[in-house]
Amino acid sequence: MTNISPKNASVKTLYLQGLEGMVAEVEASIFPGLPSFEVVGLGDSSIREAKERVRASIRSCGFTFPNQRLLVNISPAYLHKSGSSFDLAIAMAILLATGQVQKQVKDIVIYGELSLTGEVRPVPGSVSRLLCLETENQNTCIVPRKDMDEAFLLGAKVRGVETLMEAISVVSGKSIDHGEEPFPEVDEELSEPSIDISTLRGQPAALRAITLAASGFHNMLLVGSPGTGKSLSARILQGILPPLTKEEKIDLLRVESSLSVLSKESIASRERPFRYVHHTCTPSAMVGGGRNAVPGEISRALNGILFLDELPEFSPQVLDLLRVPIETGEMKVSRNNCTNVFPARFMLVGAMNPCRCGKCLEAPAECTCSPSMIASYQGKVSGALLDRMDIFCPLNHISEDSLLETMKGDYSPESPDWRKKVDEVWDRQYERCKKAGIPPVRNGECRESNLGELFRLGQKEMEYAAMVAHQMQLSVRGLQRMVRLSRTIADMDGDRDVKTEHIVEAVSFRLPNWGEKK
Image (tube, rainbow, N blue to C red; front, side, top):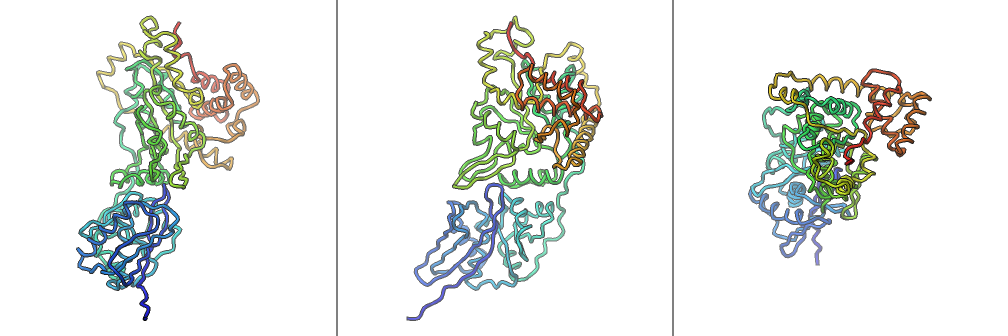
């Protein structure tokens, strides 16, 4: 009996594992036997459903789907895979195996979702996939046409296609012409914020706290009665932060791209993210997770602000999850026998009332909460999380004159000027790190052990800071955060060394008496 050798073909593809782009090989083999179509390689239901999309797409383009036993393997088979990005690679491998398409180029990398009519659609995770190409030796990379915006931003050399027929033309060595299409360019300057810092009238302490938090990227807790401007202050804080650098922008796009297909506006914007998280947020939504381990709110606030309003209303389990990423700058999530590391560099801004009714801070006589109720309400926020706050800022209702000024609205925008000042302070911090031979970080993110030497504290200043920390019963972490804040105050004042008055002001922003009923 004569043995009939199977017909084989393979192409490479890119898929997403957490936030990392991974290379896989799609192999197609056609054997004699009863017609069947199997896809193996530890794929989920979205990959198994690809069989019908591929079959319909190949036939709609005028090609013949093999009426034999067809086996497609996606290797490495020991790694779990998911998503619809394998459609285009599976279809191309089948067409090459059947001999209906002749490959004229070598080392093809190809990915994209197929419609039933042969249209190539974009898939989430394009930024991570394109970054993976930097370490992959290949001659031709075929991607969905709509992913060309991300490729232009990253400087990746790829071929964008809109249909399966165009992908076949590229593999066959033919050229395709889409004409000239403008690609989005990253905005050089930020537009004026929707809420300007000049709208914060009658709150000088809050103004100082906001500018310090922005200048050093410090965590901050806003405490005040309802209507005192806690949410407004957090929104204003976003408007005075400098724009994202290109590297920060790419890191943020990796996160956002893994969740959905990016729009041109999100690619072009350099505004730092502001994530307003509701207190019904679950642990999985906060840190990331799910069956395929997607990033959570912490990672979506990368290099921006994570705002938690009504802090005591959050689940204690959710709040405790913030402790590790605040210190390490990353979050590890294990799913499907695989550990994914998500970035977690953010500024935590919390807001809360001093008690359930919100009156014990300004009008203790009108407060309807008992001392035990106040203690129970404030105790919902753990001391470990409070210890990681650099700035505690109480807010009060503004005066009658300030209320009148808010209705006139005759003030000029001030946020752009403050943004430039904050940018200058950041440059001083980066330059100091460069001289010390450490990676450039802002004061609030610095985790070096020799803060006295790095931040230029004299013996007198270090002794004073240690004495105050002992009297306030601060932990070592609390002392370090107080020193970081004093360094930011000195940077804003333009001083080379940290002085005693800078430490005194930093101490004033530590946990005050913000709700103890007399």
